[in-house]
Each structure stands twice: as C-alpha cells, then as structure tokens.
Length: 391
Ligand code: CA
Image 1 (cartoon, protein in one colour):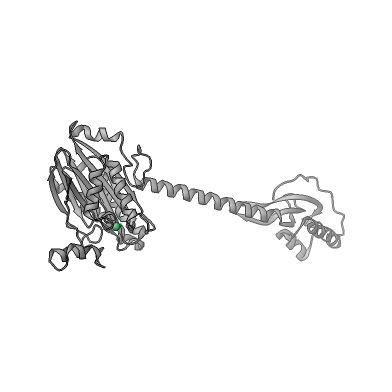
Image 2 (cartoon, rainbow, N blue to C red; image 1 turned 90 degrees about the vertical axis):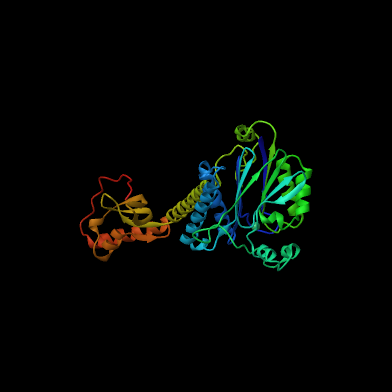
C-alpha cells in the first residue's frame, strides 16, 4: 500500500504566535501543541518534534516500546530545558505520533491533540484526550456537549515536559485500503465538531487540500487557537517501501516553518541561522553607528599638543588612545619646541590643550609662541624635521 499525505498549520485568528509544531517524514507523522506562554509553548512543541525526528531511525512500528521510549526522551529534554531557563518554566506540549508499517498503524499519544480514523465515511477517534473534562465525561459527571463548552475544557492532565516521567498511550490500528487518518491539534477540534470534520475529510480526495480545508474551516469558525492538521491516506499501489519516495516528490513542508517543499532542514537550524543573521546585522549596524559617531566627534575635536619630533603642533581628534590606537592626526606643525616651554604651560601642552576649532587651535598656538619666548631667552632653532605624522 502507498501512503499519501497533506499537512496544514495556521496561527488562527486570535493567538499571537503558533505554538503547534509538526513532523512529516513518511511513514512518521507527529503533531505537538505547546503550552506555557507563546515563546515557551513554541519551544516545548519544537523540542518534542526535534527529539522525535532525531530518534526516528530508532522507531520500530512492530515494537511500540520504541515509540514510548522516544516520547519519554522528548519529555526529559523539554523538562530539562524548562528547568534550566526561568523564562521557559512551566512549559509543556502534547504529542500525537503515528508511524505506519504496511497496514499496521502504530500510535503513541499524550495530551489533547487527536488522531482520528475515517473508514468508509465513518469518523472515529483513535486517541483519548488527557483532559479534565474528558475525565469528567468518563465519570459520567458531564456529557460530551457540556464538555465542549466547559470553562476548564483546555486543562490537560498529561503533557510532555512537566515532570521527569510521562505516561504514554499506545494504540495499534490495522489499516485498510482507502482509510484516512487525521492527526490534529485541539485548535481544530474545539472549532469544528466531528460531523463537520468528517464532512470535510469525506468531500476532499486530495490529502493536502483536505488538511488545508480543515484549517480554513476552523478559521472560519473563529480560529480561536493555533490549528494543525495532518491527513494521511492509505491507498493501493506500490508497497510501503516505495511510499516514502513516492511521497517525497510532492511532499508538503516537512516541519511547520519550512516554506520550501524540498527543504529537509529543521526548524531549530533555521531558527538558529536566522538568529545568527539577525545578531550579525545588529552588530554591524551598531558598529557602523559607533564608527560614524566616533568619526563625527573626532572630526570636530581639535587640540594643541606635542608631535613625535618634539614640536608643538595642531592635531585633529583627541589626545587619548584606545587599545593602543591614537585618536588624532597631526594637521599643522609649529616652530616651537616643547623643550622651550616652561612651567604649567609645558605640562598642559604635553597633555594636549583641547579646543573647538582650527581657528581656536591657531589662537592657542600664537599664545603659546608668545609665552615660549618669555620663558626661553635663546632664539628657537628651526625644526629640521617637519613631516606630517600621526601622534
Ligand atoms: Ca492548542
């Protein structure tokens, strides 16, 4: 049998971010719905998907314990992240996983995302919600309809990342040709009742259009939460060994934020790369601003100091150094030797007398020349070496 699939996800009409993540790597399919605030929820669901993707080669549909093990690994990874970063504290995620091997569909599940089976027009829920209201329904305290509108309907009783261990539900379904499986986050099922989900799944043959149709309908119904739908069809044709390759040709984006169908890179790598690019750009801009500010300042700063040859000179910039770099250039040399100066004037000039303009610098030089004559009776010899040189 051949596996064909489609996937669609959407932020919905109310939320500020999409905390749902998914993995589509036929014959492996995962939906994870994060919680704990919009950054943390996103991290939780993305981490679940990343860990399961990394573990995908270890998953054996004939051995459900390998699925359980992988989900427990994801649980620990999220739990540790939440513990090490205060901004992620309290985060968690649901996780509904399907792996198909021939006609054998193996499900692993935690939380209130759902797996459904559509067989000959009849929709049945494969997974059981781990929510407060479903427990109340099971105990006969409220009915299904009351559960849909219960104020605590979104309280989940099991999630990945909230404790060191998690209990995983495992289900096996023997698929038949023509069966259609739906994996979805609760943003779909809180907006659409089962008959509507069934109607859309039954009326659209193409799995990609069916997934998109479900998401669109949930948005039309209000789109109060993030919506993710994966539709997987089991069709007659090539055996399952060809399934992955036959799908790869028309495969939709493999994980939620890949927009290029051919992309096999993962969200985390994309996100890291984006962060690096943004940081680099920010540093470049900051560097350019710092450089321009420095240039602006240095171009307008002048001082009178002593040059490398020992003569009083006019400099553009400031008489300081940063990390060994001089922040000035010599603009004009005088015939006054620093050795001709005396008293505090000598010290001041050696330190550099800061002024606002070239004119002010020239005035200062004239002043220094007059005072140099006063302290040295000998005529000043002409400098032999007057080339321009940085300080
Ligand atoms: Ca949700």
